[in-house]
Image 1: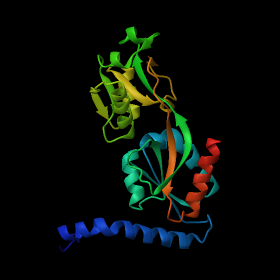
Image 2 (image 1 turned 45 degrees about the vertical axis):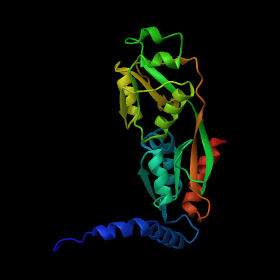
Image 3 (image 1 turned 135 degrees about the vertical axis):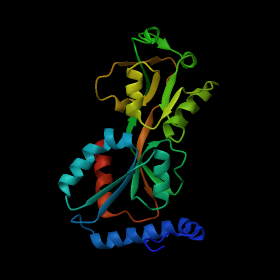
Image 4 (image 1 turned 90 degrees about the vertical axis):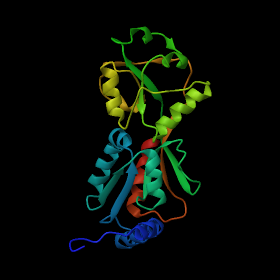
Length: 244
């Protein structure tokens, strides 16, 4: 048109095929511009809102203090969507929940943090669940609040219920762990969240499950066959040292 150009349907199809290659060219150019220094360049990270807020912020602050000339770009998506960002070359690496069914064998993973998922509820509304062991089967009688199905957390919880031949039907599915905690705190149901999200006082207590849920991990994932930019190497090193 007279004001802008947009792709035709055929162009959209072509873009899906060539976008990964375009991102690789851009990544290569950035690495050449960096010239193996940290006086410039770009750090491109993919991570969920929860991981960014509760785990990465302190590392980002420290990295920016050390290397103020490196441009930091953080793309917030679910852990599943972040795997797609990495495959298409839109980020240098991702920090993701693990297991993650969308991580391919071409990606290398580095564990950096172990955590447990927990159920929380407000004792004023659910006093019968407090101070005693609770079976997963009992929870089916209550409204379950959890992340939506396009998340590794949802995949994990459904698999755990299936492990005991239980069919989980959540009452509410959202895209924010913070909102899940808020809703559990006002008595709308029993929320399923990572334990590292509970960094402040809430009106909710943690349920004592009879069936022990296995721990999960936060991992760094990157391509095993592509060079890693210097800024990404340094940030990943910081994450690894923090896990020691």
